[in-house]
Length: 333
Image (tube, rainbow, N blue to C red; front, side, top):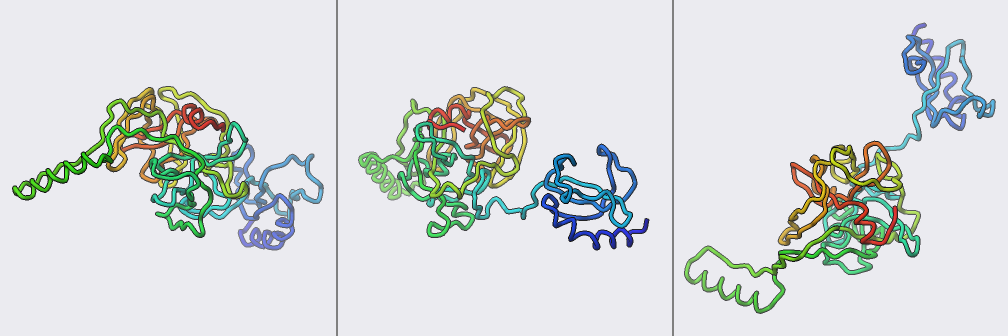
Protein backbone atom coordinates (compact mmCIF):
# COMPACT_ATOMS: atom_id res chain seq x y z
CA UNK A 1 0.00 0.00 0.00
CA UNK A 2 1.45 3.37 -0.99
CA UNK A 3 2.21 5.97 1.69
CA UNK A 4 -0.14 8.51 0.09
CA UNK A 5 -3.14 6.24 0.78
CA UNK A 6 -2.04 5.72 4.36
CA UNK A 7 -1.66 9.47 4.93
CA UNK A 8 -5.06 10.12 3.37
CA UNK A 9 -6.78 7.58 5.62
CA UNK A 10 -5.03 9.00 8.69
CA UNK A 11 -6.01 12.57 7.83
CA UNK A 12 -9.61 11.57 7.08
CA UNK A 13 -10.08 9.79 10.42
CA UNK A 14 -7.72 11.58 12.84
CA UNK A 15 -10.44 13.85 14.28
CA UNK A 16 -12.82 11.00 15.08
CA UNK A 17 -9.97 9.04 16.66
CA UNK A 18 -8.71 12.02 18.68
CA UNK A 19 -12.26 12.58 19.96
CA UNK A 20 -12.01 9.30 21.89
CA UNK A 21 -11.22 9.96 25.56
CA UNK A 22 -8.12 7.75 25.81
CA UNK A 23 -6.55 8.79 22.47
CA UNK A 24 -3.86 11.53 22.59
CA UNK A 25 -2.45 11.22 19.07
CA UNK A 26 -2.71 9.57 15.63
CA UNK A 27 0.05 8.59 13.21
CA UNK A 28 1.47 5.91 10.95
CA UNK A 29 3.53 3.03 12.34
CA UNK A 30 4.56 -0.52 11.62
CA UNK A 31 2.16 -2.92 13.30
CA UNK A 32 3.74 -5.02 16.03
CA UNK A 33 2.49 -8.24 17.61
CA UNK A 34 3.99 -8.96 21.02
CA UNK A 35 6.66 -6.39 20.22
CA UNK A 36 7.67 -7.97 16.92
CA UNK A 37 7.34 -5.87 13.71
CA UNK A 38 5.02 -7.43 11.12
CA UNK A 39 6.06 -5.37 8.09
CA UNK A 40 2.57 -3.87 7.74
CA UNK A 41 2.17 -0.09 8.12
CA UNK A 42 -1.02 0.91 9.93
CA UNK A 43 -2.89 3.95 11.17
CA UNK A 44 -1.91 3.97 14.84
CA UNK A 45 -3.91 5.48 17.70
CA UNK A 46 -1.66 6.77 20.49
CA UNK A 47 -3.40 6.15 23.82
CA UNK A 48 -2.70 7.14 27.40
CA UNK A 49 -3.12 3.55 28.54
CA UNK A 50 -4.10 0.34 26.81
CA UNK A 51 -7.44 -0.87 28.13
CA UNK A 52 -8.90 -4.35 27.37
CA UNK A 53 -11.78 -4.14 24.89
CA UNK A 54 -14.12 -5.65 27.48
CA UNK A 55 -13.50 -2.60 29.69
CA UNK A 56 -14.25 -0.01 27.00
CA UNK A 57 -17.48 1.66 26.03
CA UNK A 58 -18.09 0.59 22.39
CA UNK A 59 -17.95 4.20 21.17
CA UNK A 60 -14.47 4.59 22.73
CA UNK A 61 -13.01 1.59 20.88
CA UNK A 62 -10.53 2.14 18.05
CA UNK A 63 -11.93 0.41 14.93
CA UNK A 64 -9.88 -2.45 13.52
CA UNK A 65 -9.76 -0.73 10.08
CA UNK A 66 -10.32 2.73 8.63
CA UNK A 67 -11.02 2.92 4.89
CA UNK A 68 -9.83 -0.68 4.63
CA UNK A 69 -6.49 0.13 6.28
CA UNK A 70 -5.66 -1.79 9.49
CA UNK A 71 -5.20 0.14 12.73
CA UNK A 72 -3.05 -0.42 15.76
CA UNK A 73 -2.94 0.98 19.30
CA UNK A 74 0.24 2.22 20.98
CA UNK A 75 0.41 3.22 24.65
CA UNK A 76 2.37 6.47 25.13
CA UNK A 77 1.13 7.81 28.49
CA UNK A 78 0.24 11.46 29.17
CA UNK A 79 2.11 13.75 26.80
CA UNK A 80 3.49 16.87 28.46
CA UNK A 81 5.81 19.67 27.44
CA UNK A 82 9.27 19.03 28.84
CA UNK A 83 10.45 21.55 31.41
CA UNK A 84 14.03 22.24 32.42
CA UNK A 85 14.77 21.39 36.02
CA UNK A 86 15.85 25.00 36.53
CA UNK A 87 12.41 26.29 35.45
CA UNK A 88 9.56 27.39 37.70
CA UNK A 89 7.40 24.29 38.38
CA UNK A 90 3.88 24.39 39.81
CA UNK A 91 3.19 21.98 41.30
CA UNK A 92 6.89 21.47 42.10
CA UNK A 93 8.13 17.85 42.10
CA UNK A 94 11.31 16.37 43.49
CA UNK A 95 14.40 16.79 41.30
CA UNK A 96 14.03 20.51 40.48
CA UNK A 97 15.77 23.72 41.53
CA UNK A 98 15.06 25.04 45.03
CA UNK A 99 16.86 27.00 47.70
CA UNK A 100 16.94 29.42 50.61
CA UNK A 101 16.61 32.97 49.32
CA UNK A 102 20.25 33.72 50.20
CA UNK A 103 21.89 30.76 48.43
CA UNK A 104 22.32 29.92 44.74
CA UNK A 105 20.32 26.70 44.20
CA UNK A 106 20.08 23.07 45.19
CA UNK A 107 17.58 20.29 44.61
CA UNK A 108 14.14 19.62 46.03
CA UNK A 109 14.55 16.01 47.21
CA UNK A 110 10.97 14.86 47.79
CA UNK A 111 7.95 15.42 49.99
CA UNK A 112 7.74 13.86 53.45
CA UNK A 113 5.13 13.89 56.20
CA UNK A 114 5.55 15.26 59.70
CA UNK A 115 5.12 12.41 62.18
CA UNK A 116 3.21 14.59 64.64
CA UNK A 117 0.93 16.64 62.40
CA UNK A 118 0.89 14.69 59.12
CA UNK A 119 1.74 17.88 57.20
CA UNK A 120 3.46 17.53 53.82
CA UNK A 121 6.93 19.09 53.91
CA UNK A 122 9.77 19.62 51.43
CA UNK A 123 12.95 17.65 52.18
CA UNK A 124 16.39 18.83 51.13
CA UNK A 125 19.75 19.68 52.76
CA UNK A 126 20.48 22.12 55.55
CA UNK A 127 22.88 23.97 53.25
CA UNK A 128 20.15 24.22 50.59
CA UNK A 129 17.15 25.24 52.72
CA UNK A 130 18.82 26.64 55.87
CA UNK A 131 21.94 28.26 54.38
CA UNK A 132 24.32 26.07 56.38
CA UNK A 133 22.85 27.07 59.81
CA UNK A 134 22.75 30.78 58.90
CA UNK A 135 18.99 30.91 58.26
CA UNK A 136 16.04 31.68 60.53
CA UNK A 137 12.86 29.64 60.83
CA UNK A 138 10.19 31.02 58.44
CA UNK A 139 12.80 32.30 55.95
CA UNK A 140 11.53 32.18 52.33
CA UNK A 141 12.39 29.16 50.17
CA UNK A 142 12.40 29.81 46.42
CA UNK A 143 11.58 27.55 43.47
CA UNK A 144 13.56 27.96 41.31
CA UNK A 145 16.58 29.02 43.37
CA UNK A 146 18.18 32.43 42.88
CA UNK A 147 20.84 31.04 40.51
CA UNK A 148 18.00 30.02 38.18
CA UNK A 149 16.15 33.31 38.29
CA UNK A 150 14.05 32.77 41.41
CA UNK A 151 12.93 35.92 43.22
CA UNK A 152 11.46 36.26 46.70
CA UNK A 153 8.51 38.37 45.56
CA UNK A 154 7.35 35.94 42.86
CA UNK A 155 8.85 32.50 43.47
CA UNK A 156 8.53 31.81 47.20
CA UNK A 157 7.16 28.28 47.41
CA UNK A 158 7.69 27.54 51.11
CA UNK A 159 9.08 28.74 54.44
CA UNK A 160 11.87 27.12 56.42
CA UNK A 161 10.26 24.75 58.94
CA UNK A 162 13.22 23.21 60.79
CA UNK A 163 16.71 21.85 60.23
CA UNK A 164 19.39 19.72 61.86
CA UNK A 165 22.27 22.09 62.70
CA UNK A 166 25.63 21.21 61.17
CA UNK A 167 28.35 21.00 63.84
CA UNK A 168 31.47 22.34 62.11
CA UNK A 169 34.91 21.07 63.10
CA UNK A 170 36.61 24.12 61.55
CA UNK A 171 35.10 27.55 60.88
CA UNK A 172 36.07 31.24 61.02
CA UNK A 173 36.42 32.42 64.61
CA UNK A 174 33.69 34.51 66.23
CA UNK A 175 35.78 35.22 69.35
CA UNK A 176 36.73 38.90 69.40
CA UNK A 177 40.01 38.25 71.23
CA UNK A 178 41.21 35.67 68.70
CA UNK A 179 40.27 37.88 65.77
CA UNK A 180 41.95 40.87 67.37
CA UNK A 181 45.20 38.96 67.94
CA UNK A 182 45.15 37.82 64.29
CA UNK A 183 44.63 41.42 63.12
CA UNK A 184 47.61 42.63 65.19
CA UNK A 185 49.83 39.82 63.92
CA UNK A 186 48.86 40.54 60.30
CA UNK A 187 49.56 44.27 60.80
CA UNK A 188 53.05 43.49 62.09
CA UNK A 189 53.59 41.05 59.22
CA UNK A 190 52.74 43.78 56.69
CA UNK A 191 55.17 46.20 58.39
CA UNK A 192 57.89 43.55 58.18
CA UNK A 193 57.18 42.95 54.49
CA UNK A 194 55.93 39.39 55.03
CA UNK A 195 53.36 38.01 52.62
CA UNK A 196 52.08 35.50 55.18
CA UNK A 197 48.87 36.14 57.11
CA UNK A 198 47.12 34.55 60.07
CA UNK A 199 43.43 33.63 60.19
CA UNK A 200 41.58 33.06 63.43
CA UNK A 201 39.59 29.84 63.30
CA UNK A 202 37.34 27.93 65.65
CA UNK A 203 38.41 24.29 65.87
CA UNK A 204 36.36 21.51 67.44
CA UNK A 205 37.92 18.09 66.71
CA UNK A 206 35.07 16.37 68.56
CA UNK A 207 32.35 17.81 66.29
CA UNK A 208 30.61 15.09 64.28
CA UNK A 209 27.42 14.86 62.19
CA UNK A 210 25.13 12.23 60.73
CA UNK A 211 22.96 14.34 58.40
CA UNK A 212 22.85 17.56 56.38
CA UNK A 213 19.06 17.91 56.25
CA UNK A 214 16.22 20.42 56.52
CA UNK A 215 12.49 20.84 55.92
CA UNK A 216 10.38 23.58 54.40
CA UNK A 217 6.60 24.09 54.71
CA UNK A 218 4.84 24.78 51.38
CA UNK A 219 2.78 27.96 51.33
CA UNK A 220 -0.05 25.86 49.83
CA UNK A 221 -0.41 22.09 49.65
CA UNK A 222 -1.38 22.22 45.98
CA UNK A 223 1.86 23.80 44.72
CA UNK A 224 4.05 20.77 45.46
CA UNK A 225 3.94 17.26 44.03
CA UNK A 226 4.68 13.85 45.54
CA UNK A 227 6.35 12.82 42.27
CA UNK A 228 10.10 12.96 41.55
CA UNK A 229 11.00 13.85 37.96
CA UNK A 230 11.97 10.74 35.92
CA UNK A 231 11.49 8.47 38.95
CA UNK A 232 7.92 8.71 40.22
CA UNK A 233 6.50 8.55 43.73
CA UNK A 234 8.81 6.94 46.25
CA UNK A 235 7.41 4.82 49.06
CA UNK A 236 9.40 3.18 51.83
CA UNK A 237 13.11 2.80 52.41
CA UNK A 238 15.81 0.27 51.59
CA UNK A 239 19.01 -0.26 53.61
CA UNK A 240 22.19 0.43 51.65
CA UNK A 241 24.42 -2.48 50.65
CA UNK A 242 27.64 -2.66 48.71
CA UNK A 243 27.02 -2.94 44.98
CA UNK A 244 23.37 -1.86 45.23
CA UNK A 245 22.26 -0.24 41.96
CA UNK A 246 20.83 3.24 42.60
CA UNK A 247 19.57 6.38 40.83
CA UNK A 248 18.91 10.01 41.63
CA UNK A 249 17.04 12.93 40.04
CA UNK A 250 18.80 16.26 40.49
CA UNK A 251 18.62 19.91 39.43
CA UNK A 252 21.97 19.93 37.55
CA UNK A 253 22.60 16.47 36.11
CA UNK A 254 19.04 15.15 35.94
CA UNK A 255 18.57 11.39 36.20
CA UNK A 256 21.83 9.55 36.84
CA UNK A 257 22.57 6.00 37.90
CA UNK A 258 25.36 4.26 39.76
CA UNK A 259 26.09 1.84 42.57
CA UNK A 260 27.00 2.02 46.23
CA UNK A 261 30.76 1.64 46.61
CA UNK A 262 31.36 2.44 50.31
CA UNK A 263 29.17 2.19 53.41
CA UNK A 264 29.72 3.34 57.03
CA UNK A 265 32.12 6.06 55.83
CA UNK A 266 33.61 8.84 57.96
CA UNK A 267 34.30 11.86 55.75
CA UNK A 268 35.44 15.48 56.12
CA UNK A 269 33.35 17.76 53.89
CA UNK A 270 34.20 21.34 53.02
CA UNK A 271 31.57 24.12 53.15
CA UNK A 272 33.43 27.14 51.73
CA UNK A 273 35.48 28.33 54.75
CA UNK A 274 34.05 25.65 57.04
CA UNK A 275 34.73 21.94 57.49
CA UNK A 276 32.41 19.31 58.95
CA UNK A 277 32.94 15.64 59.74
CA UNK A 278 30.20 13.13 58.97
CA UNK A 279 29.98 9.52 60.13
CA UNK A 280 27.98 6.56 58.82
CA UNK A 281 27.81 7.92 55.25
CA UNK A 282 27.23 6.24 51.86
CA UNK A 283 29.41 6.71 48.78
CA UNK A 284 28.51 5.88 45.19
CA UNK A 285 30.21 6.13 41.86
CA UNK A 286 30.14 9.77 40.61
CA UNK A 287 26.48 10.75 40.06
CA UNK A 288 26.32 14.50 40.72
CA UNK A 289 27.58 18.03 40.17
CA UNK A 290 27.07 21.26 42.16
CA UNK A 291 23.36 22.04 42.41
CA UNK A 292 22.36 18.40 42.87
CA UNK A 293 22.57 18.66 46.68
CA UNK A 294 19.30 17.57 48.25
CA UNK A 295 18.50 14.88 45.66
CA UNK A 296 16.93 11.68 46.96
CA UNK A 297 18.92 8.49 46.31
CA UNK A 298 16.52 5.74 45.19
CA UNK A 299 17.04 2.04 44.50
CA UNK A 300 17.36 1.35 40.77
CA UNK A 301 14.89 -1.54 40.78
CA UNK A 302 12.24 -0.25 43.18
CA UNK A 303 10.70 2.99 44.41
CA UNK A 304 12.44 2.82 47.79
CA UNK A 305 14.60 5.62 49.18
CA UNK A 306 18.20 4.87 50.19
CA UNK A 307 19.88 8.20 50.96
CA UNK A 308 19.98 12.00 50.70
CA UNK A 309 22.70 13.48 48.48
CA UNK A 310 24.72 16.28 50.10
CA UNK A 311 28.31 16.29 48.82
CA UNK A 312 30.70 14.85 46.28
CA UNK A 313 33.59 15.27 43.88
CA UNK A 314 34.39 14.28 40.33
CA UNK A 315 35.23 10.79 41.65
CA UNK A 316 32.36 10.09 44.06
CA UNK A 317 29.02 11.26 45.48
CA UNK A 318 28.15 11.19 49.20
CA UNK A 319 24.80 10.63 50.90
CA UNK A 320 23.27 10.53 54.37
CA UNK A 321 21.44 7.22 54.94
CA UNK A 322 17.76 8.02 54.52
CA UNK A 323 16.73 6.35 57.80
CA UNK A 324 19.06 8.74 59.69
CA UNK A 325 17.51 11.71 57.87
CA UNK A 326 13.91 10.68 58.59
CA UNK A 327 14.70 9.98 62.24
CA UNK A 328 16.57 13.25 62.80
CA UNK A 329 13.74 15.33 61.29
CA UNK A 330 10.87 13.24 62.75
CA UNK A 331 9.21 12.65 59.35
CA UNK A 332 8.14 9.73 57.16
CA UNK A 333 8.06 9.18 53.41
